[in-house]
Amino acid sequence: MSAEAQLPQVLAAFDFGAPVVGALRYGKGHINDTFCVHTQPEDAMCRRFILQRISPSAFKHPDEVMSNILKVTDYLAQEIKAAGGDCERETMRVVRTKGDGHAWYTDSEGSAWRVYTFVEDTVCLQAAETPEQFAASGRAFGKFQYMLRDFPAAELFETIPHFHDTEDRLARFKAALAQDKLGRAKECAGEIRFVLDREEDCSVALRAQREGKLPLRVTHNDTKLNNVLMDVTTGEGMCIIDLDTVMPGLSINDFGDSIRFGANHCAEDEKDLSKMSIDLELYETYVKAFLDGAQGSLTDAELEYLPWGAKLMTLECGIRFLTDYLVGDEYFHITRPEQNLDRCRTQFKLVADMEAHWDEMNAIVAKYR
Ligand code: ADP
Ligand code: GN1
Ligand code: MG
Image (cartoon, rainbow, N blue to C red):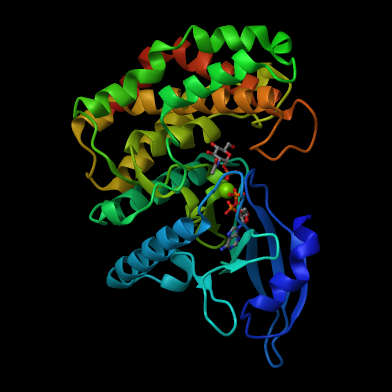
């Protein structure tokens, strides 16, 4: 059943505090089904909420996802309060169900739904319009990491096992390729070669972690620009959203995924690959901003491996898009055929361009160490 078809029972389940006047598809996420719900209190302005069906293909244990989110948002609220901030806007707030006050609702098909208050007076950008906006996102993600530096990581579930385990992503790609169940491999021989030529790279960060060089921290793991809401007045990163993958991870991956998505001028599914290249000025802007936000909490080794974070998150994401294309687009939402193949191609073009500018990427980080 479509998410829309479940809306009447789902909307009836949550305690919005006022009558619901409508719910419309919202946002550009690739994973969850997101709706914006409007309510009309009797004596106040219309209020908005974010309603989401948690993707069953991405998250096998929505109870564990919600347990993590409640713990992390409670913790952040305390940190924000202690720093004199506004916990209503600077972190997500979960809205409970009517009656039993659950943090999520399970529909008649077994899918889990949750509601957040809408963080108003913010914008969600698909691409930075100015370097300042990119810097603001970097400060916000760096600060997120800093605020969670003492969070007890053992309390968190691994919501998607092996999420940024690039070696495992490579193995799953090879399995999909061996099966080639839709006969699509012949359309992407160049992309397949690109991955196989970079097998060794897939182990670089994991080896550094195994050798004890890179520490495990509590990280966001999905630090795209569109996962931070910017304050419309100040332009600063107001609230980090999409907390489904907050779990133990590497700081270089949080840095790297932001670079992958934001330090270029190309949509993730652009067909014209000549538009894709690393913008080293934006890269430098983000390095500085992320480190400012992290307030000295990163080690020397983490700083040294930041460029690897950028390259590996881009390579890994391209491998994930390619794998999903080979198996028939089961994971990432698509709105047209071959969208996942196009997404893979932009990522690999970006990896190649990072390789061509590798010395500069390292030199920029060295300036801020
Ligand atoms: P996905 O996992 O599919 O990316 P997200 O949790 O990122 O889903 O949400 C999708 C979009 O919904 C975001 O890009 C943002 O535009 C919007 N959004 C999510 N949560 C909020 C919120 N609390 N307030 C305002 N907008 C939100
Ligand atoms: C997904 O959920 P969203 O759209 O913010 C994905 C990320 C990918 C990204 C690529 C849980 O992010 O890992 O990097 O698409 N999230 C999940 O755009 O798999
Ligand atoms: Mg998102």
